Length: 165
Image (cartoon, rainbow, N blue to C red; front, top):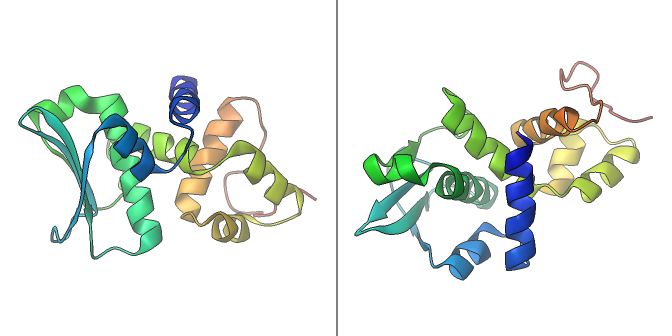
């Protein structure tokens, strides 16, 4: 899914940030933090304007992940959201291609390639790396799988969690 990687790199270049909230501000996407029951987040259109709602009950890391995931839906699946609100109960419940693509978008947005490679070369394992980067280990695994599709050779089975050294 290199097209998603290229899209994210273009967005970061155009907005000067990888922060989902700042990207939304730059694009005029309405973003709300609300109590939304068991949902982590949702993306929809209200009066033809894009709206992302993130659970105010979630922790900071979870909110950032949900924000990036919903922003992925904005860029990749606006046509679907215009007909039917995209709701997330579990970010990593990748029941179909649409959810996986939104997670790939989030992984590329939140995890910088150079920073990731630098940390891994220090001999850190997947879980240490995820903690240093402030991301969910599942998101990191998606990033590593996607980097493998672009020519890297990381073990993404988590059986041997040290990827260098």
